[in-house]
Length: 337
Image 1: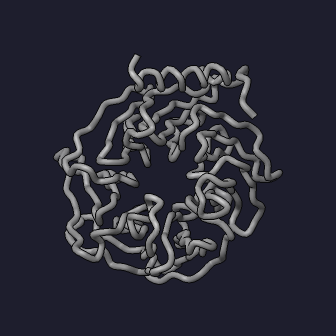
Image 2 (image 1 turned 45 degrees about the horizontal axis):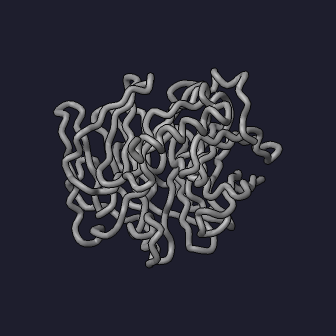
Image 3 (image 1 turned 135 degrees about the horizontal axis):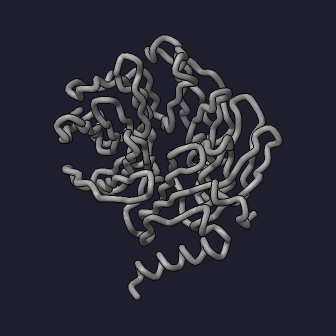
């Protein structure tokens, strides 16, 4: 048996030993040294794209079938996927953003010059006028390196033909996440971490200028609008393996002891779930500030998830891990607490 096959078998055995065979099905597992998936997004018609390290790009359908996609630019770390009706945008490191034209089925890339050559686009979203709102900082920070963060928020023309218009920047903050609290909201918010605490930034004039909205005494890695509240997830201190944290802005928080950073949040079956550094999926009860269930399909980081419907989700993580989670199959499942 090859080492890759052994690890795949081992992970499946973990799932069965925890009673998770019905609830969480591994679609792909690899070696810890394999390239990792960093993001996954719905691109339409029951299809999803997952992207990650060294140009890793894969298409998955709602039944869990996968196929690899050819990425033309080599070993660029792909960090964020944002689809529109006409295109799919992918933010990367090395100062690159990619645009996949749905009509011609071809990729184009940005050429933003020396200012962004060693920066990464860690989060992106599309504004009402089609402009890309992007954020990030020094690409070494995104890979846990030690250097000045050089964080920024910028606007980018969707043609990628013009350099980003920087609307906020700081040498000592890295901007991990952007969010908009509702499709009709005029506000955009961002999480900028200084190494000590996270400053929550707010803009109410089309992301042109930004003001401080508040502070969170933790590293906020992800902001999430539930339809009622803004939640954040992250870690208590800069060490990603320490206690994870989830909370409402200006509200209660939940400490996930020894789970590591809560990389992102997922809503499924009316519940909020946190994906952690130590490979768990924690079902959260924000009102009572408790963890009500804990699924653990792996021991490696789970980074991002996307809902297929109100019961199912695709989850990606470290070492080319890809899982399909189906809560409709979990009624009789014994869960790891």
